[in-house]
Image 1 (cartoon, rainbow, N blue to C red):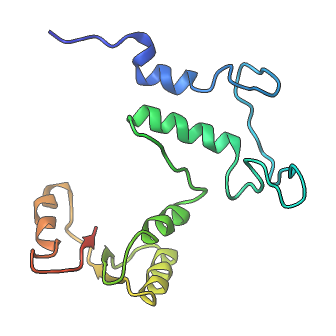
Image 2 (image 1 turned 180 degrees about the vertical axis):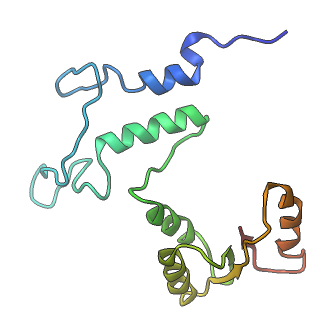
Length: 154
């Protein structure tokens, strides 16, 4: 017998209700949208939880919390762009790691991969013609062999 989720456990409820009535500053029911790029310091050389919009803001943190809750994760990271997300992932790689990317990938991605190659991470362009969801089993052959010391990322 299938167990029915309670209304409060459903994804659509979480997505719609996360952050409602949690504004400690003014008690707004709907979470405010913070568009500020800079925030006041508590004192000289004493930043608060937020100091500059690119490093974080309350709206983005609330979104990350909602995404983590929806995905059942401990936490989430929200980046301002796809390139920022890619750079974040590439930054986790170590020397001799291999990144397999489409040969015709976005120019910014290619430049970022080339810049990372200077740090020891290599990349290889793959032709994308003929690759489909049906060819997914063939991707396994692209993984490094057990004798390889450098992991590959697709």
